[in-house]
Image (cartoon, rainbow, N blue to C red; front, side):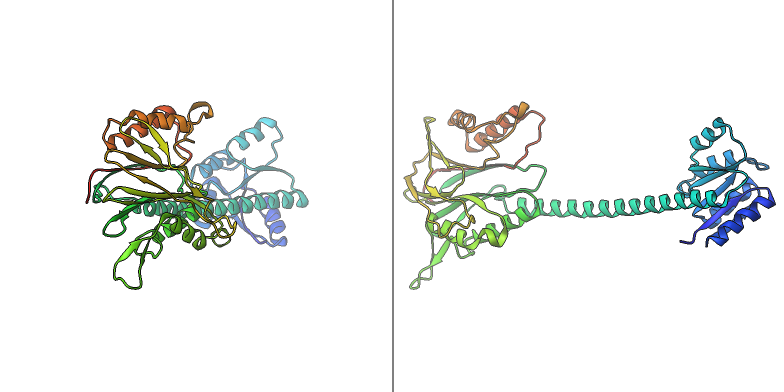
Length: 397
């Protein structure tokens, strides 16, 4: 590979010998006879390597090397000193100034070319590493932008602040971890008498999980064709039972299609009368909190969604929700919240906190859970999303 090499030496014979060696090897020699000329030529031509004599009139080689290394534009050009000085201290001084190597006088052609080629290869490798690092940083920047966009989309799908649904009070808490996760929850009107509630958790983190979360959220909207269905003889859409909804999702999101699975709890509440139907797909069971602090688990359901275990059926549970009774939906980011020493917050601690909130407002109850997790974890960042959705029957809509 041909390179442009600057030779700085005040001895004409040395310039002639080195130029001849370089030219015969296919390189282009540039010549300077003093320190200032060396600096000017280096700035103007930007050589690939500099052969620098130590003993020159005006600025000596040490001073020139110091100026080269202080200039951000020239600092990466390798410098090889030319010298008849054999004292170790002289060599150490040059290396401390940033020189890459020494060539002793008188010159040996094989040694000159070997040392030059070594430094040129090292410079090429350094450039390649710098380019690769710059490309890697650019890719990392784009990835971080994609993750931020995915997180923004995920948050946009959460219930809006101030959401009001007929006949119920609703509150929630969501604390995403640093990585984009797959937690999502929602609450919406299904038909003229029913409300729908869900919470889901897609396996893994990052953009693929977030994309599946978005898709599942679209399927769970009243217009998505899964949670509401119109009878042939009616213009009105009616709510689909929770077990049927989960079976439809299991068919819609097979593992072999998305290489992800997810857990979910889905509930339908008839506001007039308070009939609550529910089912879960391997998700932490919703908890029913009575005004006296008693807590019940609503565990009916079936297998994880998308596991490819064949047609799945999901058992449904039904309860008559009374005014003042509260339902809490959550993801495993709460019981698996990690504190000091790797200890987990645990389901029992979560249940105790919920029982202590029976006399609080629904919003204050969610905040109390968030506070308990913060106190347990201290400054440690959560390794998973923390999601909590709660609702309470307050009257007919």
